[in-house]
Image (cartoon, rainbow, N blue to C red):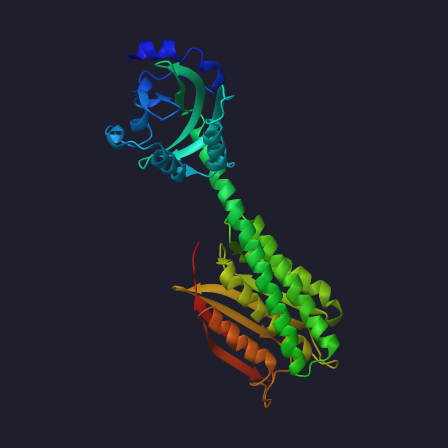
Length: 354
């Protein structure tokens, strides 16, 4: 069958399709046909159909209908319930009332490329037997946009699963922290204060992760701007000036971000509790810096409080938590300095770049 004959054949089908069929001179690239009997699926007419779907020209030599359908379904990308729609259509072919059907937005992997298929199926008589004639169209005009939609849909599914996973993990962390603080004899008031900062910080991280341009990553400068506002509002009565210096363009993945912010929370709570007594004179200050050092990131935390010189807090819950959290990000504490002019810690950890 030549191209002109094909054009004549599909005149009755063309109104059903989303695009004009013959804008491309190479019609074989765009349209293909199959005719078979319904009773025993005997192929009576085939024009580029199996080759079009990536089965090869010799596929008819060992053709089996069920095997063909199973392979066809395995190659369909499940977008907008595509697989279910094709299965339902296949089941409908056995119905004696079936007359015709149109199906579109079927994204199919030929093994070499992904094509967007539209199909028109119609009951016909072939050699005096009930049969089916199938016309397949490769809709080149919409393939790019639709593939973008598929990718977006996949990202949304992954994002939703990730949200559930992280919320569950964060709730488990919250529960564990409360239990630990109770075991260490923390007062209810102290536990509530630390949990308020923890919960607010986690909410802020989630907001940054899911609203940012780089999915799964948090822009640190933007985060610390909002964390400063959060901290200042929650602990306004302490009149602590929260300062930070973040290297431009620095971002962290969520896997690293959450332990790091838990470390920040612990250090802040520690400063609030111990660094600035009621008789503290001068400006109260907490300072954070994040910067790259080769393949690593250096996190510096310090306050200008009264320091912890002579105290033994190595076994405190805060230090135990910080040590464990540093291990979670494969980092190391390279300095903890407790002196009369304040407290400083430096933590180095690998930088997983986006």
